[in-house]
Image (cartoon, rainbow, N blue to C red; front, side, top):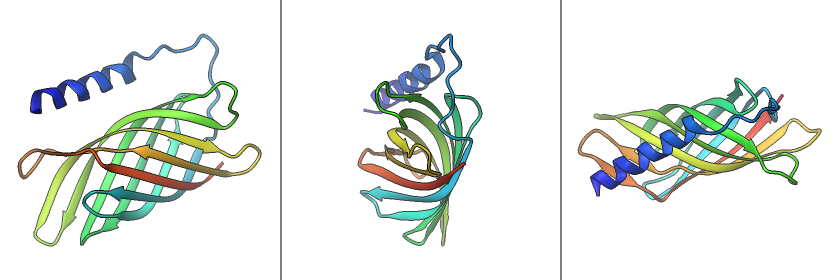
Amino acid sequence: MKNSLLIAVFLTVTQIFSAKVSSAQEKAPYNTGFGLMLDLGTGGTFVGPHAKHFFTGNHAGQAMLLFGNSLTVLGAEYSYNQGIPGAPGLNWNLGIGPQFYFGTGTNGFLLRPQAGLEFKVPKAPIAAGFDWRPMWELTHGTSFEPARFSLTFKYAF
């Protein structure tokens, strides 16, 4: 199980970094967005501020500070984003990044791959996303929780 998980993470990272760059420069759906993230699923619900910034048309970074279950979670991620032809404002994305959690008497490190969809309302500064975000804990014994998802709502400009 542990080896297959490592292989899955390696393949995800390889896919992100080896994605073809189109000959025409893709335009980002927005520059920066600030809003709210809900992290839901097995193990509790976390909520807090979230920001996403596009460095190029396809490459973005995001950060979040989440609170729940007597824990605080701080995370940062890279994501590759691509528009869906024929669906203005709708993008798919793949990403990965570290998260650190802190709480009363406990702290740890998580690796969070993610795959999802994001919709930027055309001609309005509103974006919303839905991601599958499995949680892979690398401290206190290794554990993997596949049933984790997030909803994001942001003001995007």
